[in-house]
Image 1 (cartoon, rainbow, N blue to C red):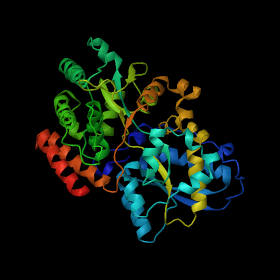
Image 2: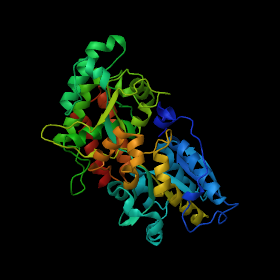
Image 3: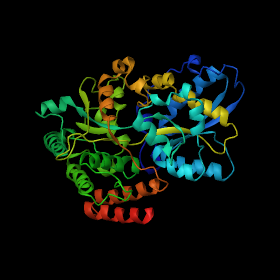
Image 4: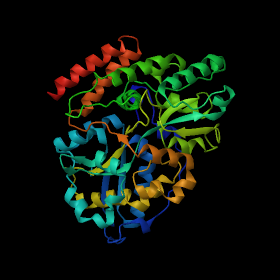
Length: 436
C-alpha cells in the first residue's frame, strides 16, 4: 500500500526483512507438471506493499513450472486506474491484477477483470474454496452473484499496546473508546516531554488510512457505511460519535495525526514511543523481531475498543487484496495457474509463516494451523477473534469515489476546517448524489 505520492510509504516495505526465496515445486497444483509452462511468461501487476511476497511467488512458480513471472509494482491507489487503462487502451500488458477489494465492483463492471466463477467450480478440488475464511472470500471476490478473483491477503485491524508503557503509568488496555482517550491522555501528559505519546493515530488523507481509522470507531459504536436498504448511513449517531472520538483523541496522539501514516506510526510504535496503535495483524510478527523492534515481549494485541452498549464490535476489513485475471490477457490459462498457486492452502500458509511477506490470514487452515499459532501466538489469537465477525467496506462501482469523498471530508475535519457534523453531512450528501 505505497502512498509515497501523497506523503507516505508502504507499511510492508518499511517492515520487510531479507527473505530467503526457496523453490517449492511441491506446492504446484497436482495436475500440472514442471514442464507444462516452460519458456512461457506472464506479467503481474502487484501493489508495492506486496513486492516481497510477489518476488517469492514468482521465483517459486518458475521453479515449479518453468514459467517466468514478471512483477510490476504499482501504488495501491493506482491499481484500478492502471489496470483499466491497460485493458481499455488495448495495451494488454498485464495478465494478473492485484486488486484492493474496494475496487471490485468498478473493475468488474468496467470489464477489466475476468469472471472466474466457472473456473472456480471446475477447479474446486484444487482451490478448496471452502477453506477460505468465509467473510473474506465473499467480501473480496463476490459481486452481482459472480466471483472475480481469489484472495491472498486478508486485512483487519486490532489494537496493539505497549504493555511496558501502560504498566509504568498504572493503566490497562482500553476496552472502550472513552477508555482509549483516557489512556492516551494520561500517557501523553506524563511522558510527552520524553517523546512518548499515548497513541499513534493514523489520519493521513488517503482512504486506506484515515477512513480505516474512522471505520474502526464506526464499527465500535455500532454503525455502518450503509443502511440495510443500501442508502448512505453517515448521518447516524454512530458515525458522528466515531468522528468526534477521533477529534477527542487527536491532542494526545503522536503529532500530528493528520500527517501520520505508516512511515510515522510504525517506527514510533516499534521504538517504544507510542503506547497504542490500531494496525493490521501482521505487525505482531515484526514487533517480536529483535532485528527491527525494541519492544520484543513488551506488547499485546486485542480486539478494538467499543462504544457504549456495544459488547463486541465487528472488525473492519481495512484493505485486503485479491488476484484476478486481466480481461486483456492473452495468457489466461497460465495466469489462472499462477493465481491458484499463489492462493493455494500450502502456499498461502508459507507466506503467512514468512517474516517480511506482510501477508495476513485468508484461509481457515492457515489461521488455525499449529505452525501459525507457534509462529505468532498473540497475533493468531487476535486475528482469529477479529475475523469471527467483520464489517466490510462497500464494493459497488461507486465505492472508490465514495471513499475519496469521505477521506477528503474527514481530512478537513482533522485540520479544524469543519466540525465532525459538517464533514459527515457533506459526505452524506455527496454519497446520496453518487448513488442516485
